[in-house]
Image (tube, rainbow, N blue to C red; front, side):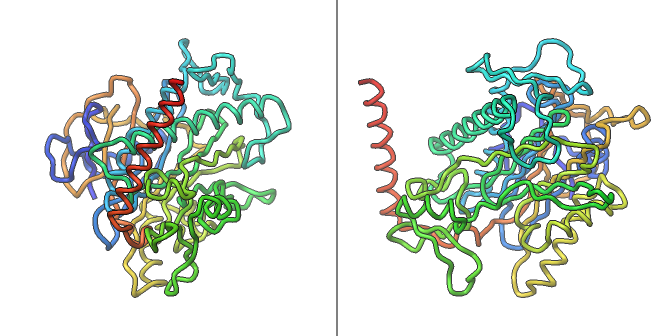
Length: 440
């Protein structure tokens, strides 16, 4: 598999695999630079079901803060799931970044004293160093600073996710009525880790116990429709949740009066036919104060978690002979597990980002290739060779990857078109009524 590194100004969401104008780079060169610059390994592999619908992104010096990093993995589904995943991949980091006010002075990431400021509330400055609970996987209410940090980050993520979802609803080129995507994202700021999850992708941390043994800690919850809190909301909105006879272990979300679309998650971007019936785009936000015992973080779509346990994933990544290729080795193992465990099923698509936490972002003896000092890229089909890559205007290094398979089993069937058009009219009328109320 090769890598396409597109220019920062390119409208990546509208590009097809066959389009020209991309500087191609050799796979090993790309991964070497990604590893030496950001201590990240990322990989994705197409499954056997159809078009690619997985996407992922890594952004270094996120929001203008030196040493900060943003990672995200997105799992599209439905007829236009690929386009939805690409769109969210491209727009969500921008929404989050614009909500953060970067420091004007030079920042030393080793001090971990960066301030977090929202555009709307400059009084909400929070010293990220104030959150000091090392074994927490969620925000703590023990201190005022932690409550403020919780409130600030939740507001940032919730607003950004809502804005992206609303832009999808209004996008004339992508019909998101029965198409959508999951999202599991992480922002690392020094020794602070903030995770936002939407859907059934997952974030798992590798850390060490008191006996120095590596253990897996799941940082997110798979937001399936049968979770008690999710189920209660869906039923309260007249949606239905049940599993089909031929897959009793897969609960799905259905319209009130149709056995469609059968969505296998309770939260997602898009899928607007279900937004009035309990599906939401509100992420769950988690926090962890990193310690020297924390080794790496794995973000992955359910193509990995459906066949490998958290413990197996941690073991595979930690035992990789070359950490820069750990994500590829993990996906290769997942593909073999699919063939062994489900020989009559088609292999699912997989996307993985491994963020290594204790390795310095760069070392003096590891010079990154100058041709890829700053770029935006997407995984494409195999093409060798390479050319220079232009830096983005913001000077932020961004790596993106997109290659996978249509998740035909995330959405079972499409609702009847008449009901869909009725939903469009109700949604439009509702928005008009809200505008009238605001004017009054």
